[in-house]
Length: 255
Image (tube, rainbow, N blue to C red; front, side, top):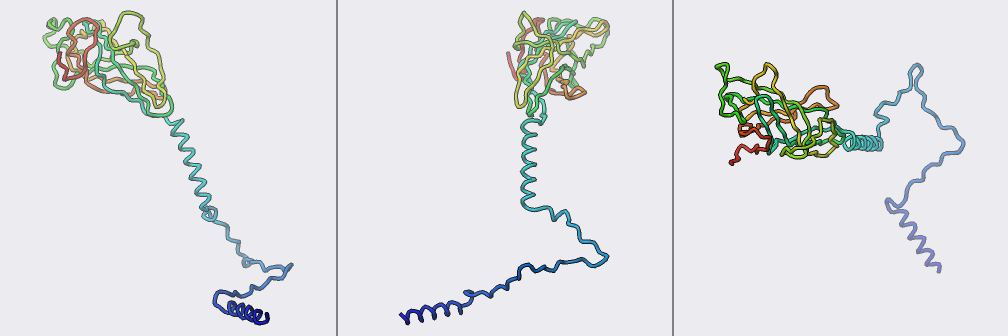
C-alpha cells in the first residue's frame, strides 16, 4: 500500500517535470484595487476612432445581404424593361390611288418586370435607295398621266386605324385604336391596322413599288417622344389586286 502511494507520487512529480505539462502560475490581481488608466499628455486630444474602426466582417456581410435583397426586389418587381417586336411573316394590304390600308401581325414583348403601356402606333414606309417607283394594286398596268416624271409619294406615314382579330381582314366590327398594357415578362400578339388617305393635293398612293422599308413607331406612356420599334422590308410589290387580302412577307416565297 505504501509502495503504491510512493509510485503514484513519483509519477505525478515526473509528469510535472515534463515540458509543457506545467504552466507558470498567473499572478492574481488584488480585488478592489484601481488599475492605472492611460492619460494623454497635456495639451493633446484623444485620438478619434476612424471609419475603418467601425467596419467589421459581420458589418460587411450584413451590408452585402441588404444590397442583394434590395437589388433582387428591384430586378424582379420594379425594373422597366425594353419593348421589342419581330418582322411579320405575313401582312394584309389594300392599295388604291386614294387610300392605303396595311394590317401587320405584331408580337410585343416586354423583357422587364414593370408593365409598359402602348399609347399609339404609326407605320412609316420608305423606298430603299436605288429602287425605281412603280404602280401596284389594281392600277399596276396604268401609266402616270400628268407630269413626265414618275411621282414619288414616299416616304409616307400611316396612322393606327384599328385592331383586327386576325391577319386576314373580314367584314364586321373592328375595335378602334386604344392604349393597351404589355405586362412584364410577357408577349402580346396583336394585328394592327394602319391606313392613310390621299391628301387633296397629294400624289396617288398606289405608287409604292416594293419592297418598301417599313418602320413601326411606338409612343409609350413613360416616354415623351416616338421610338422606332421595328424596321424591316415589306413586300408590297406583291399586292396586285384591289382587294384587302393577306400576302406573304417572305422574299423567297413563290406562288
